[in-house]
Length: 81
Image (cartoon, rainbow, N blue to C red; front, side, top):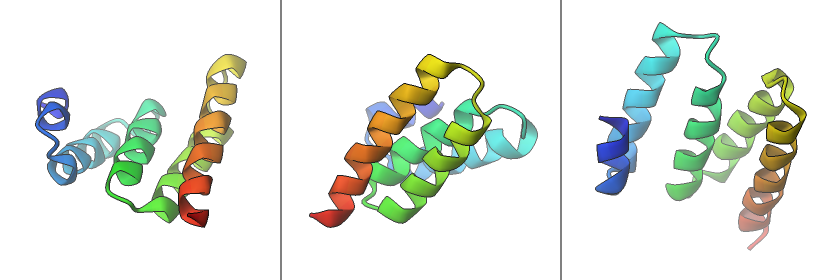
């Protein structure tokens, strides 16, 4: 459902699905990354940055942490634009 909504560019609905997923599985940190991407697509830079910062704190994998840091830098540049 989430993928279909994103493919149809229905980011608000996709975000609601991810919020539900996060409520059902609060330890699944990937939902934070997904929320960050959707917030960014919706132009909600502060929410995107906050979700990514929490993801970076919670994700144990160093490579994924680095990729998230790079994405966070891009998102913060959006805010400056």
